[in-house]
Length: 111
Length: 118
Image 1 (cartoon, chains in turn green, purple):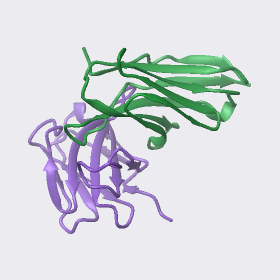
Image 2: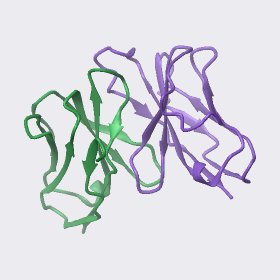
Image 3: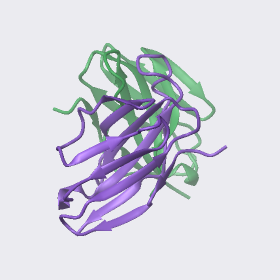
């Protein structure tokens, strides 16, 4: 079992819909939880991060972390075609500085 | 300001050739990371530098992989005797934080070098 599991998709939703992306993990030492967005042939771009459990909102994006269930989510409201990309969940433990990434979910927002 | 840059953007190598991939981090960033991203996968950690010191190289897949950052800024990832399984995108990331500090999670990625070994 990999440390971080993420459904690769693809996930296709109509413009304006709410998108829900999620990951599960197995390492209880993870403390920072991030979401990166990666467009084709570009490097990952940090969207949001959360330290430990809780929710964080930034514009149309909301990140949630449930450490008791080892489950994290990213919600995108009022989705736009420009949100079409691969979304990578990522985590860092309190023991080292390596980011552990999920496989990424390919998201298509249909106009 | 300039972000992380990498060169070349694309590299085709014949099996057995040596390659060198360059990373120019954001100026003043202390920490530098290399990752390997295979097709359809998330990036996987290769190695980490704090200034010129290579503090973690546990992700390097074999002794054919070597990385350096001699003056604490530009870094080079070298792959000797390339194999087909080395085909991937190699990503470099930098961070203003030191290892163990809050903020190390904020890593800024370059566009990557796509290596194809034929």
